[in-house]
Amino acid sequence: GAVVSQHPSRVICKSGTSVKIECRSLDFQATTMFWYRQFPKQSLMLMATSNEGSKATYEQGVEKDKFLINHASLTLSTLTVTSAHPEDSSFYICSARDPRGWTYEQYFGPGTRLTVT
Amino acid sequence: GENVEQHPSTLSVQEGDSAVIKCTYSDSASNYFPWYKQELGKRPQLIIDIRSNVGEKKDQRIAVTLNKTAKHFSLHITETQPEDSAVYFCAASTLRAETSGSRLTFGEGTQLTVNP
Image (cartoon, rainbow over all chains, first blue to last red):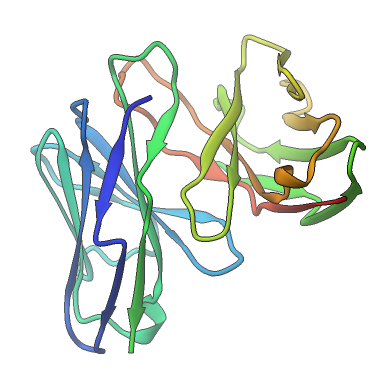
């Protein structure tokens, strides 16, 4: 199936700093990518929908100035956590659908474990 | 918006037994219902999905049933094996004509433990 990668897989940063997470579709072009956050022992919660060439759509309660999303190309979306705080520590996962496929399967990246100290 | 509820939150079965996980959804416009298996620290893996024009789908030991009228769908795993132990999530989505995919709303998850 299609492959979605994320980088980095793990990152530790100090409170107040910013962290950028990359999500790439390796063998297909994705006009839309989705960013999820998953706290320990909880479900995946959609944070925002990343749209290539236009502004991201944020879910209610997600601060767009804190979680900056840039979808500058058809294979890359980035999520920047600005002024990170310990409560931002979480597992961040992106997903995308391969438009070439005949299924509706969304392919998830391997996730990024963010720890803010 | 869509709300998906999943039960039970934990399920423990003996190897070889069947496991059933149930989900309900609120948005009658939802038309795509995938199920994911997630192991600790890993990405969710699609194990089966169903569209709203189908009532049941089966893939070897895994089956999913959908009742659109009642807005609920279920995952059935037969002949469970220890390697089936993981967290399972149901999800719902509204697919439209565009091909870039639609947002998924996930259930809370079920921790399945298969005891040898």
